[in-house]
Each structure stands twice: as structure tokens, then as C-alpha cells.
Image 1: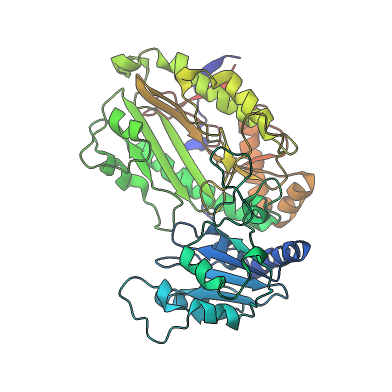
Image 2: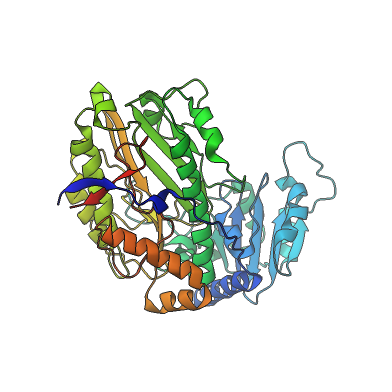
Length: 468
């Protein structure tokens, strides 16, 4: 299947209107109810969810509270008693939680050197919430372990990734054999609680975040000019300072592109015809476009001559194939095979999964791997994250956007509750099918107007790829 270069409809690069969506208290309480059901199914008396600044998403999912400077614990009893354990600065911020909850200040979660006087011990806190010697407890950290993986631990249920001092205090009360790693019930595939959205409100929120991330990328693309430093380009983002998922990227040189995750550098300048990459995220969505800083074929630097056809077009074709293959009931292995049939050769350097789930954290999990039998379910929120990279010559191609998979029932609810969101999704779907010639499944909902869009010459956004 061939790829061609076509004119981009002007509306695609216009900034979409940003209409804020805030998740309701009832939605968080429903998530807690689902967690309680899982606890009962597994005969647990308590779950203890650990969080910190980097690993906030599991606590946030159930409470809206995202750990900032400090560690935190969300403790839920089988009968629904809710407790948040925070440090000095987290106590005031915990009132961001939109429902009634017990608050306990454990001052040793606070930053080093802050006041500790009068703090109960963790053992006392665990006793206070009702944990006893015979309590059955699920620990939710950030990672779970699977038997049979290279380098895996020998007891996947009784290894934990939360700080040892917390477990040490817990095991003063609870019998170690009654404490299990419960993280897989949250982020495991295909049935982890966080791995699907169930309410149209959640789709509307993801779309809001996706529009904002795409708008930032549009502004950066329009502003970028040869000779500008990476930080000068970044200044045109006009980001609203709401929390991001990962470090924002503006990369204009082979050095910064080759490092992969380097932040904008005031000493690195864009050279006409060289590699160029942008990435911006907000909680719920990420948008990244990485290609060549050129206006046309004649302005591509000598070392990248011919790479549009041999590297970048083929990569975009793999992205288009990803969009065409993914869908409710499709397995991760099927998507992997379809993509790797195009870019599986060593020169494309695909080392990570070609696509993954996203949440308030940027990479929640992935079933897109060789021979995976795990199917995508309705409500999956996904990133078209296929990273093609080469070290000789240095170049990378990325066209990453957010989609939601929604079956007929969920689409009907979205149309009823958020008709404007539904209409925007349908406009994007029509563009993808009729202009990009990507035959996406009916359950694929693109979350921004940049979904699937890639610019062969990133300094000329009037031109995009399309399938023949």
C-alpha cells in the first residue's frame, strides 16, 4: 500500500475550542464501589493504595487526590470506610477530594526536615483504620509481577513495589501471608479497573485534554523556524500550567533527538532540513509529532535525503495500519503483527510496544506485543505510539495521538450525554476515513483533529500524508 502527500484541510490545524470537563464526585464513588466488589471477590478486608509524586495515578483514580511533594496512602475497608493518609502539606490539599473521607496526617510522609512532632506511627494508623492480625489486605503499588517473565520475582503475590518502611510497620500487625500484591486488579489487562472508561463523562474529559495537547503542538508547529533555539520554540506553547504526564519535548538536533527524552535546551538551534520533534502531554492524553524540519524535499539536509520515502512514509503507513487494525475484540497480538509487518525490519528500530494504554499516567499498560491474545475492550483509552528510530543516520519518526474504543452502547450514551463531543468525534472520523484514507473501525473515536495526522515537512503544515 502506497503513501502520498496531499493538501491538509485548513480546519485540521485550527485550534479546537477547549471546553473544561471535571469528573464528578459520583464518578469517583462509583469507581470505589467497583473496587469494593473486587475486594469482596478476592475476600479482602482492606486495600492500601500507595502513591507519590511520580506514582500518583492509582490514588488519584479513586479520590482525585494526586500526591504532590509527599507519599500518601488511600485505605479502603471492605465495608466502604475511606481514609487518606497524607503529610503536612498534603492535608490541606486533601480537601480537593470531592467526597467525605477520614483524614490522618502522618508527618513522616512530609519532606525532610519538616516538623514531625505529634505524629502517630504507621502501625498506630493501621490499627486506627481497623487492621488486625487476621486481616486480609491487598497492596496496590505501581507495578505487579508476572510469573515466567525474564528476571521475574519468585513469588508474584508477595512481592511489592512500595517503600519497605510502610510494609515493615504493616507487618507488625498483619500476618505477611495474608497480604498480597493487588495491583493487577487495577492496571492488569484486560480487566483491570483502570483499564477501561465506563462513563461518557470520562470520554469527554479525555477529549478535553487531547484537544489541549493538540492545540499546544499546533502552536509550536506554526511558530518553529530555522535558527530558533529549542526553548524559544517552546515559549510559543502557551500552556496553561495544568499538570503534565511527562516532560515536554522540543528537539531540533540529532543530539537531542537521539537522547529521546531531553527537555528543550537554550543552546540548541533548529537547522533547516534536520530532525525535529515535539511532544506535549496532559493527564489523559499525549500528542507527539517527530519528523524533519523542512519546507519541501529540496530543503532536507543531505544526510536525510531519500528518507521521506524509505523511512518516514513507511512509518506513517504503520501508524495508519495501527488505526485500521485496532478495535474492540481485536487482540494486541493482531495489532502488533499488522504494524511489524511494515516496520519490523531492524532499520526502523522498534523496541517498545507499538501502542499502549494511557490514563492520568502516560503509560498504564500494553497488550500490543508478539502473540498477545489479550483483546481490547470497549472503553480502552489508547496511544498510537509507534517509535521508529535510527542511530545511523540519527532520525526518529513518531505520530502519536489519543483514541478511545467505544462499542455501540457506549457511543450511544456519549451521543446522548455529550452531543457536541460526539459530533466532533464524527467529524474527525470522517476526515480520517475520507481524506487520510484510513479505514478505521466504527468503535475507534479520535480525540483530537491531529489524530493520525503527520507532516512530511514539519515546517509546512499544509501538507500531510494519506494512503493511496
